[in-house]
Length: 228
Image (tube, rainbow, N blue to C red; front, side, top):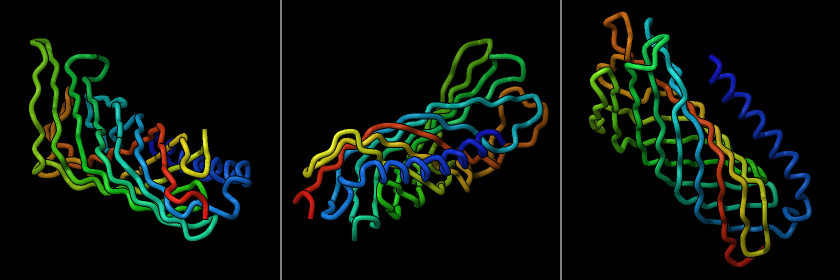
């Protein structure tokens, strides 16, 4: 699907940009290097439902965002490991084919655990999303109603994740980075018996619900002890 190709292209783009940026900032990342880094980050972007959309329904993009803290331990100028913990929201949107109403807006929230390998300014790893509930909003001719999505109706999600930390402002004690991350979802967001979508013409619930995301933002990473 289009979003699948977009996410894969984004992963390749991240690798290429990180390689170029690493060369561009060779002086900064040469020996000595920053062994320890940690600090806050925030990003926002889009998610989209990548399962099979039932006949009679259409899907569209949904806002996604993540904020939290990350830390990195670098073993030499090139390689290290990183871990980020944060709050993440992603979702999916459906409407009746060729109509704006009725529609459904699902916002789903997670505790995001992101272990990664670090190569220069490029991170590759996984995202583990632990369910923290959500909201389902339905709009029809009679108005809009909403209901909570309990944790028990959600699955823990697993993503293959890539990110780039591209320096904007940097000194020995810390740096402000442009942050871009792409997550390719390999699990389903909604569990149980699935759900029905707005306008669908069949009675078969949707059970396949991967939600990949693409986000950009900023991170500020402190470097206690400076370069070593």
